[in-house]
Image (cartoon, rainbow, N blue to C red):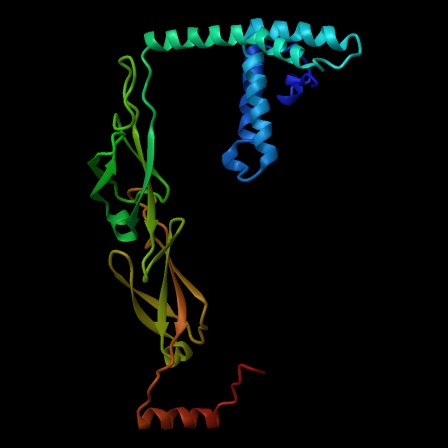
Length: 292
């Protein structure tokens, strides 16, 4: 079996590198071939095993020096390193002692030093109105023992979609007297049938009759917190958008995005006899044909 080039596996061009450089190269390689980013990729799975193996050997100065001596001695003679089973076992036994000693030292240090608990992340959905006005929300989550625990989450006015709320000390327990981790709650803002949030702008539909669209009008339109009047120009078309400044989502305490109203022209499904006659007269005298 050929001795693996651990420096090449970590994308290092030379063996003359510091432990910090090895650690940095390991982090980059592990991130690139992480299983979560390469689902179902068997090549990536083998690659991450080699990356971890290379790091275990090269991250400890004593085992790195031994590895370098073995590598240089074998390849300086133009031979393939460790072609036999016994040599392969000897190679790994050479480094195992250092690795195990390093692990024991690390575990001993961990028993002495306070270790902060890990953070926990979760996500909750909030409707657009509640995100705009703010509220207190009760959520129930299971702790590490599988028991349900209720938290009161205060959601501030104008919270952003994807923004996180931090509950200090509500994460995993610390060790050796270390502080607990935090609970991070990601907010997902849900649109409703009337309003849709895009950035800081709120989108809605403005329904018009055919005669309002043809003649122009002033129409009342509901915003997320009040009602306003908007001018509709003569001949407006379905799909056109009218922007109403400072009637959208909160940007700061005193500023807001825009309300964007999309025009939708609605034709009555049923007509009175008089309405039907008027439409017939219009069809006879009008030369307008949108299909030409």
